[in-house]
Structure formats: C-alpha cells, structure tokens
Image (cartoon, one colour):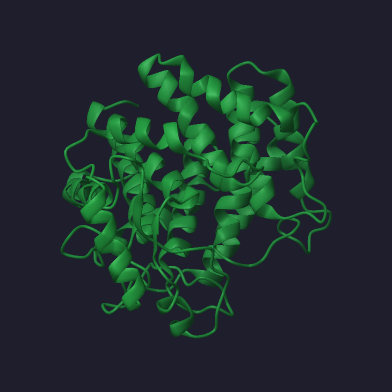
Length: 345
C-alpha cells in the first residue's frame, strides 16, 4: 500500500529524471554499474552488482567495469576488511558470490575466500540444513548462490548436496500447492522479493550444478511450478506486485526484475518453453519504466523480515531514488534479457 509521500516521490522522479524506456538492456546495465553500489560491503547486494560488472565486461570487452568491481572487492580479498561476519549471517556469505566469480576468472585468492565462505555454512550436523539459516526464502538464494558456484568450481560434492537439500526442503515447507512461495512459516504470505529469492536460488543451482546432479529433476520441477504460477500473476503493465497474489499491492521493482531474470535464463537455457517470452518482454518494459537515465529507481521495497500479517508486507514503503538493492536486481534483469535476446547459451 503506497503512502501519499511515496506517490509524490514517484511523481518527482518522473518529472526530474528521464526514464530509460528507450534504452537497450546493456545501456541500462552500464548506467547501473557506473553509479552503484553506493555502499561497499560484503553483502549480497553489492555482490550482485560486482558479479554483473564482471559479466558486463565479458559481454562488451569494456574493462573498466571489471576493474571497478575488482577494486571494490579487493580490500575484502586482501583481508583489509572483514569478509565473513561473526556472528555468521547469510547475506554476508552471499557477498562471496561475486568473489567466486572473480576466482573463476583466475584470481586464486578470491577463489580461496569464496570456498572459505561456502565452508562456513556447511552444516555441522544432519539436523541443520546450512549454518545461520533463518528459514526464510531469502536463504534459498543467499546460501545457494555461493554453494553452487563453489561446487561447480571445486568439484566437491558436499556443496552440491547442501544446496540440493536446502532447496528441496525449503520448497517442501514454503512452496504452496499453486506454485507460489510464502516468505516463511511465520510469514505465510507471497511476498514479492521473497518469491524472487526462491527463484534466483533455484536458477543458480540449475545453472552451475552439472546435468548429473541428483537433485536436478526435483529442483527443475520446483522451478517450473514456480514460473508457471508467477506467470498467472503478472500485472497489466508487465510488473509483479509487492504481494504477488494481492491485487491491491503496489507493483514492485525488485520482484519484477528478479522474475524477468529467472524466466529469461530459463527460456534461454531450455528449462522453459517460449510461451514465457511475452511475459519476459512485458516484464522488462516494466523494469525499464522504473529506471531513470541517471540511475534513480522507482518502487523498490526496502529490507524486509518475515511478518505474520499480510499488512506487514503491504505497508512496506516504496523507495524512490538511489537504491543499491533495486539497482542490483535491475542489473541482473538487464544482463539476462540481453543474453536471452542474443540467444546465448
């Protein structure tokens, strides 16, 4: 539910900043990587921007994006700043997804740090799925994003097993019969970004883990049920809502970008058929409409923990302006839409 203040702020952005609706996906990606992250920390949000910057250089041969990401990560890799928090928290561990990507590009120190982060969440006993778990759908992305990468690059099956158990057990508890995810057992509502976290965790596992991964059939089934459910709840402007199945909820940027990214990668890699293509293109249009050419954003839900009531999610304000979290998801969508359109595999 929007407040009057957020509506006014949205209007101000539209008046004072030109929307990026006429730009191509890589143009949007350049805008985002140039401006963000504003706050440099070892968290999942800057990591998605750093990872996207590495991908942008690979796609364009413009080395400045890779160099910027490496420069911002280097203090953590060199031990000048704390990389793995104590007490351990999964958003900090997820910051190492970009460190792993840098390691895959030949940085041995980065690869070692990423593996250390994956080791930190391997369960010490069978009673735990991963260390520092919250039970929220957030965990599906925060843990799997690192476990899947490290599994692929180390060949150590422990990481793949942990990712598979996490995704299947969380889906067993949190994926509804209609395919949508509730945020948590104690947050039984289909929060938008919570569904985005579930989608991206599954997508990372399917992307990085091998065809022979034993949990692949089950995880692919989770993914397809989820994408089919999301397809049914796309708004008329192409966006998805702050609470997916609540028509009164505002149309929110991060869930829209995350859903577009998950669907685009799925069609490109053959996990989904082409009936999803119109939804991807309409969704990308909704993302672009919420990004200004100076990188300002519109309709971004802030950080949100699990809440027992639907109003907990509906009354979260919409951020309008500069925002690292929204930028990270826009960048991911831009890169996935570009590669989808290019037919890259």
